[in-house]
Image (cartoon, rainbow over all chains, first blue to last red; front, side, top):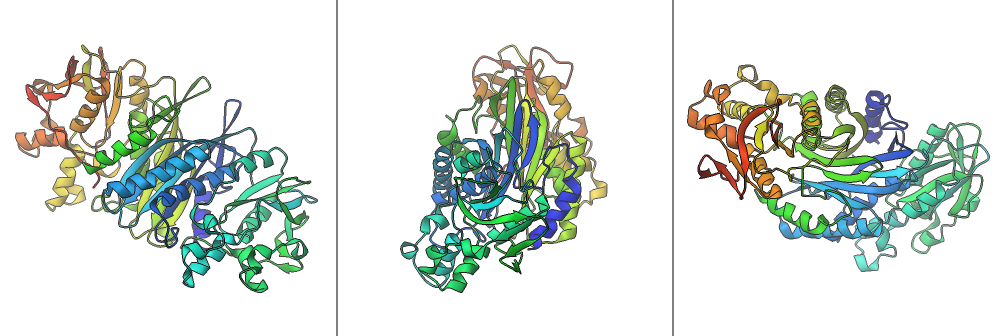
Length: 294
Length: 294
């Protein structure tokens, strides 16, 4: 959670830059440019914090693309270019080629040009991803309105479930949702659709709880997650109901989208927006926690 | 030099992306966007390879901005936004604030908005910088024409001289060009002016030799550096003539611009462009070497 303390410094120093949406306020920054907006974001993955056991080098590259483009998806933006800065232990050509091949495959799949790369040296394999997109409107986690319904593109907790199964000794081939952990997909198409009608939008990278709290704060509303509406069957197949709920609310790494709208044909309804503040799970206040660096 | 082998892989995989100037061909990538071009680049600095002894945290931030914007300067582009992804040992708030203050100061000085930051964990303090600019024309190291004169914005070797003096035990306050080493300035204004008339342009981050070789290769011309034209007095004040020449040709970290034009009122003339290939220092072929990661 200490990351959020550092983000306060970012907001304090850069919150008044000449941008429509400055740094620290959303997944991405927005700048008006001609008839539309340019949308900017960066995200970093490294082998210590982000690469699960049994992950292949191609998947390091795919993950770098996915986490960065997920910020654009959570801004309703269309990806334009992706760049990466990679820090490697040494100049291992084969490893480098495989990582770049993964970047190429995921960039092609999600329609973004790879516009550059920088190579540096570090004892920890790290890939910093940068992406630029375009958007017709400013779409952020501010803007949710009392009366809106709350939606997610898919039920979260799958990536965290798999991660914890790995820790308990399961092999990759035994994981029920291995693709969510090893080859996450940014919800680009969904984000573009949602931006046409939603009032607030963000991605869920750390946890549903954290994203809901940030949305509540930026929109100045109360977020109510309705226990009656949650379908935990994708998790209760493998763990008890209490653990399933824990994974659903606090698990990270799913890269789904959380959004509010009067109504939606996309996504799963999990709650609603009311006057007030804070995030509630039924009648109880929901803890601000989830996966975070540090 | 192994970095250049890895860059071949980048060119091979991403050299045919839908961009006016793709990755690996120049300091930056160019994409036509409306009536102009968007220009993208990234560059990384870390405490092992890039931060000299006695450097202050604010200067880490300034350097991250300078090296990244220098790529835009070497593309004749006007900076639009800067983003950084910082990897820290731990969530040291004071260190983080000082680095961000340096970023803020240098971003303001060179007229670029700071549009975001990502924070990650790593045993080596690393700052990956990413910048987007705009340009009216494509300005790269391709385009030098036989008959052009060769110019640099200022005589190189100063940063490397200081670095080697530090290694020999000198203190920061004894260095003759400490500002070149600790607070390098990207040649943004000069780059914008030069782009109005030059045929080829690039920055000199690794060494004059490396930049001249890349320019020769991309332009398909012979680059002749004229020993008679070189003024080494800024270096011979402190070292012998042979060492001074070594620093001038192969020293890194000055972030000056190298360009070719029919003529120029900006910069120092150091040679000319001829039909042919390769880089020559007088009658001798010039070695491809200089500062490089790895």
